[in-house]
Figure 1 (cartoon, rainbow, N blue to C red):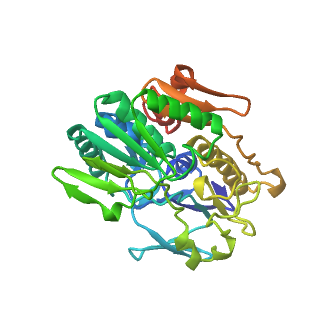
Figure 2 (figure 1 turned 90 degrees about the horizontal axis):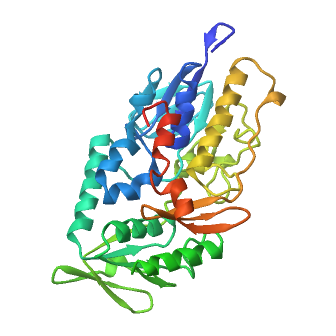
Length: 360
């Protein structure tokens, strides 16, 4: 976008769902650079289906280049920010007029799509060859993985251990109860208020022996750790944005999703301190608001005309296998095949690909 005859430079740090959608939306309006340590966008809420059905990953993992036809992509880690530049681990310095932080949660994944797809095949082999599986963690990841395995491999013994008093503690107790009942009906053994020390695991024949915090012994052929991931914001402690982080490591933003006290720095997705559940569909809404605001600013629009972001209400959809799900809406909590139709069949992968301008 021309402003006084020069093209504005936008740098987006983070290629998750929010950063990628924002990059796609702005690629023809500015000189755009997307910085990401991996070469692809992954629809993360489909990753558990990918483990039981690796071919599903062909659609839910897409190279940044597939949708970003007009921007630069720098495959590296950002290490510092000054008032004018983003510094990279590989020594690159990228100048910006506008900066967007979209680093989300820290996830150690491989650099290329090929390696990521291979990882899912390996996870699938691990599940296929095991008769008994231990899942550590009863948040959405652990619950959805247990649901996927119990649905696709009903003969395998699945044990889920969670340190909290109920599953899915981020949503209401009603949804937790319905989820617990569903898992039990699929013969998943659920142990609450227990932790597993994975460092003290021993072997017994082909099986591993796990010990819980209450002294209980669990034998299983393999385990998957499904604990929450930390925010990817510690690197910001060394940058000009260190004073903009709150105690949880989230970036404090105003109603326009601009980092408070900064005129040309925005933040989107999980890294923001917006008081709402951290979910993919809300991250996409963040991206659309910031796209609108950056376009307006580059056109020389008035600050008071900028779009505002309203925090999302607590809607949550957790899929349980291929047909069922548990859904929490502000007015009701429902489970079974009705919410399953909303999410479980395709996990919104087709819709998200369409948003990115790709074939569903």
